Image (cartoon, rainbow, N blue to C red; front, side, top):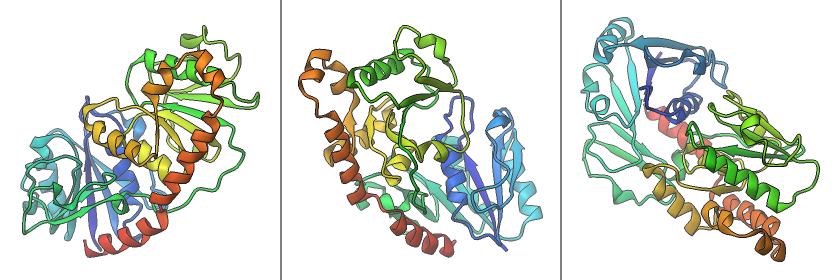
Amino acid sequence: MKTFIFIPDTNKNAGLGHLYRCFKYSNIVKQKNEIIFLINKKFNKRYMIKKNSNNVKIKYFFFSKIEHSLNLLKIKYNYIVTFVDTYNSEIRNINFKKFSKKHITILDFKAKCKTDYLIDHTFYRKFNYHLSNKKTTINVGLQNFPVSYKLKFSKRNLILINFGSIKNKNLIYKSLKLIKNFDLNKNYKVIIINPYFSKKDFIDIKLKNKIFCIKFIRNIENLYKKTYFIIGACGISLYESCFFNIPSIAKSVAKNQSTNFKNFYSKKCILDFNKLTKLSLEKIKKNDSYHEEIRKVEINIKKYFDSNINKKHLGKLFGNF
């Protein structure tokens, strides 16, 4: 039996993307192995899940000094595989070979990294992007994103607004105004996923009873099954929605998302949030092709995003660990 220790970025300034990406990678681990998450003790425990999608129990250890916790785990478990997903250079530069048989690092930017396996699922990432290291097996491209199943849609009458945990009311306000200008049918609902705002913050946008606000959701797939399109950021959730064949109107809201926006937009796999929100209502009414543009995006993402390919590739990759 192997023990996989996932170490996502759980510092107070980190978003939830690293944590939930690790949850998704844990789904690839074979059921006979153990799964441990090493979490900063100051992190909000409400975001933890008891089991992954394969019904495997997740054990949590909370650290103040990460190397001390790794030493304790090394004593308890024989064959450890460490899996790091963080922008924190201090954690990435730890000598994990002292604690584990094999070490894996998620890295979607250029940096020196001592690891056995480097995984970068950035869309259209070139293989030679990362600094070469003969001791490191480099895996780049969409086939490394942790999604291994298709989604069965039901009635698609939801529009999601999801910019992550960014506290920016104006972004959501612009999104709602854009949806209103699209003049969609009467049956749709708008769901805003954001920890900071509630429905009363957008009462001046006259969408009547169509707006619903959610602070946090664990099983977002339940919403994806009913989603027509998403307005949101260019982070991990964009990859996920594309693999589920849900089109997005997207905006880069962080420096590390700029490459994603550029690559997705160049392949016509997203619509540009900035361009659409700058259009006047008169121009939108004159050019009633936005439903068609959304359909085109859906067709394009089906060309590039195939969860069956990922399931086979990740199964083999994790078998090597």
